[in-house]
Image (cartoon, rainbow, N blue to C red; front, side, top):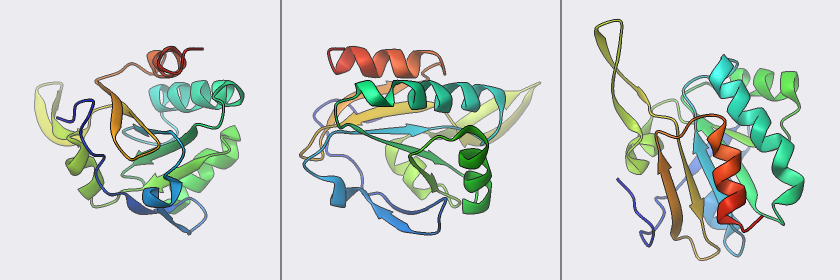
Length: 150
């Protein structure tokens, strides 16, 4: 698991528009990277819309969402809720593994691998400033605003 002070893992993925996004290009700005299990599901929608709703108060902090969904699913999610930030497709879950959020989960007694909803605030130098594993959808925007002193 990543902790504050750790270097952020490399992120180079395709967004909902088919463009390649490299987090290194965002150096010089704070970035919130949040991982969600599946686009257009209730918890993920609450989390994504909550972040959309506080975006104006973030003073330049960039929001980036990552899930195993394909870019087309990410595009539908963005279109439906007018999210306005990059949603990245981690279809092989390599980035999720690097962040430590691809873990064994259980549902109705069945075990499977999946995304553990988590968020990371990365500072302007590419270092983890805050790491919130197993964060609730409602707490994601609250914790971000607290970390930014808002």
